[in-house]
Length: 191
Image (tube, rainbow, N blue to C red; front, side, top):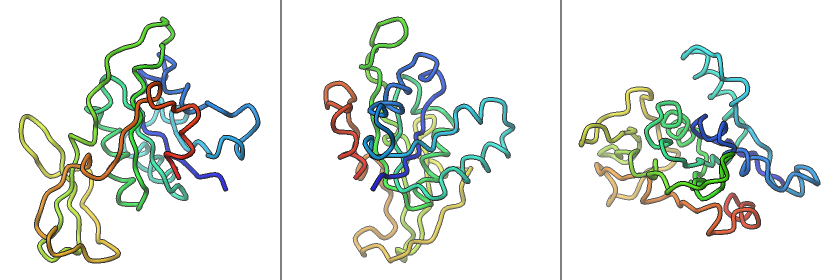
């Protein structure tokens, strides 16, 4: 059965065509062959105010089980991408990152890989292991992520994690679209 995937990305990567290479790949024979439905909101979100955009992101994340973060040069520092990642976690989605700068842009050039957004976002587990507080790395320090209050966990974390902070990169993988053969392997990455 096809997965419902939410794609988080910096809009510049759509303009450069890199994000769409991933979002639209393998669709020549339809959704079931591709193995996923695209729940990204780029076309809808272009002219939306902040509160409406949050609501739009929240509604599009409903019913998805995977969030694929398409990593370009500035993705890691985009406020809305950070919100999409944190809210995806709160919704229980699995996460993965896909470096897309190795894909030729509309200028037919590639770029160096951008920083991994999972290195700049984290969570602190409560002292009793029942809640998560999201954090972000800003100006050389970890701070509470102001756009989300955190959430309760469905099951208590093991005692060794109580009161500890973790970068998301500890738990969530990243791939490179070209060198890791994303065209053929994306469906296995989201399974």
